[in-house]
Image (cartoon, rainbow, N blue to C red; front, top):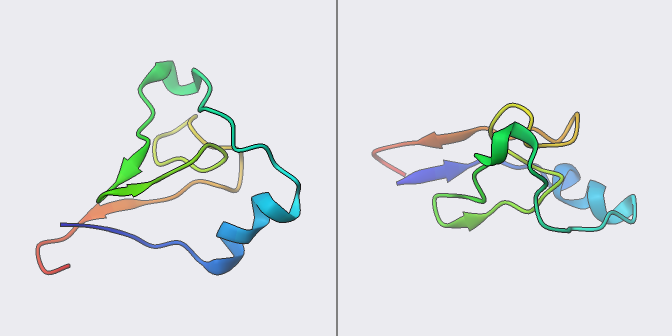
Length: 66
């Protein structure tokens, strides 16, 4: 199982900024994950280097016990 840790502030920030949750750009060579553990990760956020706006990087960790 995978676990995605995101704070409420991280989720609310793009909305507060009036951000457009458009499709992920080709940053990172087009190898950007769009989900972690079955949870969609919209652009602005990302788990690979170069796949998120600065300050919106997330960690995706697989855990055996959930």
